[in-house]
Length: 286
Image 1: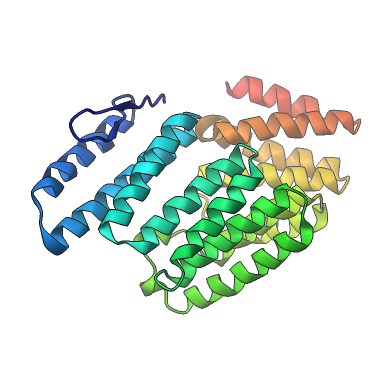
Image 2: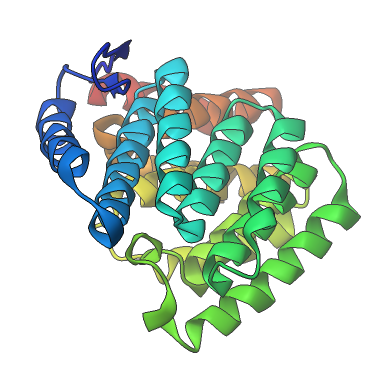
């Protein structure tokens, strides 16, 4: 899927006419037409829906490695959310931009964007605040700042547990963000910090809660678990775990494929034989 963004001279919104985004863009255009004629609370609701569509398109752009396009759509989403007065959505959009920065290895922007999203604290839910705290923690982990990372992640854990007491208060797009998901975020942070034992523990516990139908996520966190096993010096477990997710990674998660190649390289450097099996499997799946 290739998503290309150009700027519309009429509505001032990015457009994504290609591939799987055509349907989403058509729906967004319809809502934009409705928003132009809306007034009062109805206008706020329409703008909030536009912001949600824009955030979804941004995610699709990021997933297809169209990073400039993703940034443009996240910015548009944030602007619409602010205009609509939707603090939860504005905060979430900044958190998603933080995630994009983290995925590019830009730890400082990740931290700054996560902290900026907390300017909305007091008008956002505990779950949204927890997402911001964990994104800041992951940014600190990427910098190797263990104390700051674990402090932020502990704060996030408390916020997410509080949110779980009243899930009906959370915005609908937070449906996936439960304790199991958070465990896997902690696992990724520990992987960044080089603690294979902690990373594997969090990732295994989190993956046990993830439905089999979540193929894309199971591929990503599965390869993270493989790399945690490598850190512990367990090449056999690493190879087995990696092989289990090759098919899903090739089918639905290009980022996981990149991490599988990284895991194979790490196994090679450790003198383990599993690297060839992973590479051969990746080749055969393609």
